Each structure stands twice: as structure tokens, then as C-alpha cells.
Length: 171
Image (cartoon, rainbow, N blue to C red; front, side, top):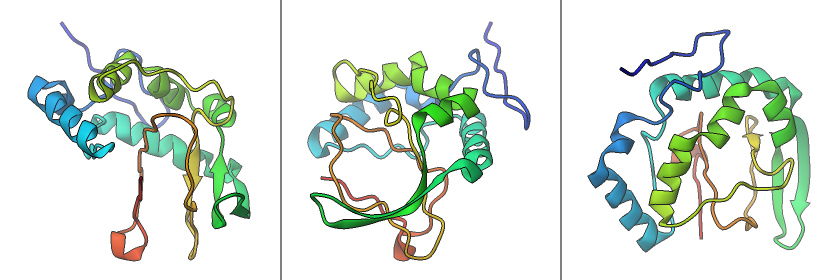
């Protein structure tokens, strides 16, 4: 018997709760995601997280926003602006057991290893392994840049339409 624990307003996601949406467990779906990733180097996963897990993450990230640091600079080497507020992995881990659980969740790691067709390693940088970016003001931007890790899982908890700047570009 499986027990699904649902996060409530004052509780983090339970380690016993399923993290991924049920569609992510379908073998054909995983094979299709892997194929798309191998062709494009990117996989769009609009139903990655189970609704209760997504809600728990969104709630915690919103609750922690007041702790974020303002960033306004030009990215060295890329000459692109960064205008946003950020919160690094250490602070996110301390402020949200849900985020820590999600990062280390075996179910998510298994899916990512299936998609990439290889091992996925934890990022060892204390602040960069998990980052919340808040681009909430007019003109806010994360700026074009390359990241060091081979893979990045980007979860948009909230985003405007593409015509209003809600676009992810990747190389």
C-alpha cells in the first residue's frame, strides 16, 4: 500500500509523498523525454512535479523571497545585465526542508538519469547547487551566460507569457 502525504500550508513535503507527476513514471514517456533531450540538449517537462509538490515548492520560495539579495551588475565575460533578486542554496536549504528534499529526492534523480542516459551528480558548490531567482520588476533579467555544470534543472514556479519576457533561452 502506498500512502500519499500532501503538504499543507505549514508543513513541508513529506519524504513519503510522491514528488513527480504520475505521467513521469510511464516508460514510453521517459523514453520520449530521453529522445528529445538527446536531440536538442533540452527537455520541456510541463508536468514534472506532482501538484502538491509544485504547490509546496512555490509556497516556500514565495515565503523566502524577502530574504533574497538584490543583484544589479553586468555579467563579466558575457557583457549581459543581471537585474534580479537571488537566494542561494545555503539559505534555501535552511529555510525550506521541501527544497532540500526535492534536490536530493531519489525519484527525481532517477528520472534525470533516465533523461540524460547517465549518472547525475550533486553540485558541490554551497550556494550554486540550488538558486531561487526572483525577476519581479520591470526590466528584470537573469542575463545570458553559460553555467559550469553539465546539466541544469530549471523549475519555473511563476512566469509571464513569452511576449512579456517569460522566455528561457538555451544553447
